[in-house]
Amino acid sequence: MFEYMTVQEAAKKWELSERRIQKLCAENRIDGVVHLSRVWLIPKNAEKPADGRKKENKNVPL
Image (tube, rainbow, N blue to C red):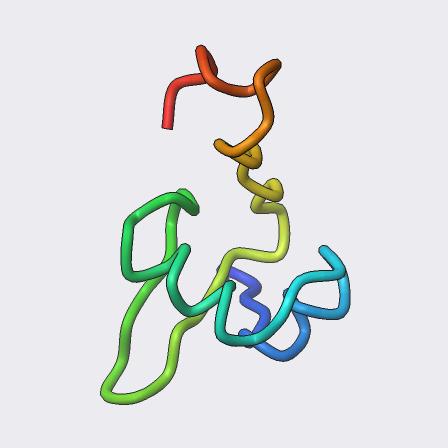
């Protein structure tokens, strides 16, 4: 069975705001997310997406 974390758990784990996590999910920047009704489910083993604002991350595929 897959293990998922909530937006709140991901925000604490990655030190980002809950709203930022929601936007990353909506933009498909996190692999394996599932949207059920009003809830985003993020795989526990998902990696934090690279920050596209930083120059060293500009060439990283999304």
